[in-house]
Image (cartoon, rainbow, N blue to C red; front, side, top):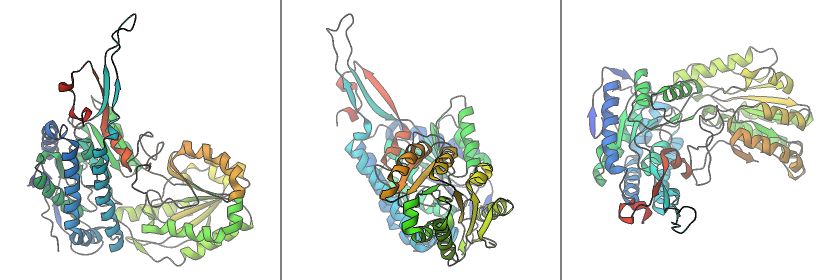
Length: 505
C-alpha cells in the first residue's frame, strides 16, 4: 500500500500541526512537507508522558510485553509502505530496508520476551536478623524501577532500527518509560508511518496515549528543549560526535542533570597479525573492502583503519583491497549533508603529504565512491586528525614495523565501538598481548570477522569508552540496554501488600 504523509506531529494520540513547514529531501520520489517542531509541542509531549508514566510505569510486565508485540505487528502490517517511503527518503536499497524492518520488529519482540522472564529486575532480598547484636538487621529488598519519561533522537543512518520505534524506544518502553521521539529530518515520512503503527498499537492495547509522541525536526531548538525539559529523565541518541556532545553538555548543565546515552563516533580499527596475513592476505583485503563499502560505509561499525606489518603480505593485502574497491560503483548517501562531509573527509586525507593515496575517486552530489589511503605507523601517531571518523567508504592502511608497534598504536586509540583481531593459531601469543589493550578501548572485540552488523542478542554490547559513547557502562543494542532506563530501589521492612507487584510475580 502507498503511504502519503500527513506531515504532522503525533503528540499523545493526536496529530498536530507545528509552526511552519519544512520539505523532505528524498533520494528519489516526491518530496513532502512536514510541520516544524516547537517548544510548545515538546512541553505538551513531556507532560503527557509524565501523566502516562503514572499508569504505564506501574503496569504489569505482561501488559507492557503485549504493547511491544502489538507495535511489532502494526509495523509488519505496513511493511510494503514503510519500505517504499524508506527507500525514497534514504536511497537505501529495498533489501536493506526489509532487513532493518525485521530487526526492528525482532528487537521489540525480544524485549517483550525479556521482561516477561523478569531476570532484568535483579530482585534481591536480605532477610531480617532480629537477634543480631549489637543491633538487629531489618529486611531489605531491592528491585529495578523505571526512571520516568525518556527522550529518543532518531538516527540518520538507520531510519527504522535506531529511530522512531528502534532499539532505544523499545528498551525504554520495555522498562516502563514513556518516550518522546525527536524525529530525524532525513526521513520524516518513515518516522511518521512508524508512529502511525505505534498509535495503532496504543489503541489496540488501551495503554495511555501519552506513552509515545513523535515531534518532527526542522528546528534545532526542539532538540535542545527535549533534553532540557524537567520531566525528561534520560536521553538516548545515535549520531555525530559534535551533535551528541552538544546535547550531552545540555543534559549535564540542567538544574537536575540526567544521563545522556549517546552513541557517537568510531573508526573500529582492525589489527591484522602476521600469520593470518601470510595465510590469507588477499582474502582479508577483499573482505575488508566489502565491509568498508557496505551501505556506502554509513555504519557506525565501519572498519575504517587496518593496521598491518609492513612487507610483502601487506602489499598483497592492499592490492587485493584496491582491486575489490575498483569494482564498487557509486552509492547514494543518506543526505546531502552526509555526502558533503564525506567529500570533506576525503579532502582532509588527500591534503596530507604523509598520506599515500592507494585508490582515489571523485564523489559528486549525493553519490559516494570508495577511497583508500596508506600511512606509516609513526606518521599516523603524529597526526591525530587521521584517527577521526570519516562517515563513508574511506579506508586507511597503517603500516607498522612490528607487532610491538601495533600495541603502541592500540594504546593511542580513543574509545571505539569495536576492535578486530585477524589471527591464525600461530598469532595467539601476539593476540594475547593485544586483547587486554583492545578491551579497554572498545565495547566489542572481534576475532576473524568484520564488525559491520550488530546482532540483537542478550550478549551484545554496542557502546564503548568516549567518544564511541558517552557512557562506557551502557549498550544501545541487546537486552542489557534496558538498564539505561532503570534505577535500583531498596525497600526496607515493607509488608508484602505494599511491595511492587514485580516482587511477587
